[in-house]
Image: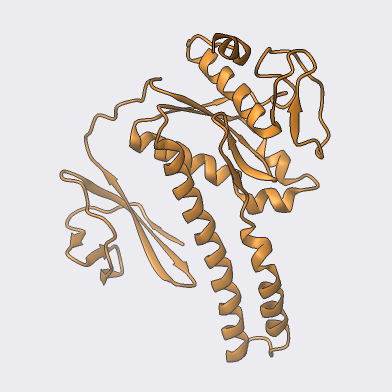
Length: 269
């Protein structure tokens, strides 16, 4: 990766970018530069699919901050269901890397059989790199589509403030990294910003140990227990959905909205 921090003067033409020292280089522009925007920095990255240039643009614009409004959605993430929302939506976790692991092992075996540094060795290495890039692109594309789906009917989105580093170092670290919770939260936050949806992280402690209906602490559940059953009020629902409902209640309380327990809503009906 090369960074060009001094991008002064005329730097862009249709289909061309002027890089310091290198000069004019052809490139395929993926989006238009905003009117009045000034290119301040260029970052050139080499990937197996080709060379990419990322331009940092500065322009004077007032960025509105989203305020809490509309319908709130709480989100709980996990490995059984990638997400569960407070309104009952559950999405199964795709296994991007795990599904490609068998093919990756085969390609790496082919690399090990080639003479180190030979042309065939480089070709085999390139196939391994292409598979890794394909997995990364599939995961990022799926995260982006899911974040837009969440924002379709929401004015506020609340997620857990998780210790992602700790999760990645645990017994299920490989699967946590494959799920890409950190990348998903970043993409979801960016999507909320672009679509005017309020986004906030809330305390993640004991979200699966509290009944969203009556607020009573039900105790720690085993991973095999997939259903939340409250011994106090009898409220029964999916374990992850119940945790998402607790996340929603904490989020609404954090932004100053009135929190109504589920038991009150049920009684009112």
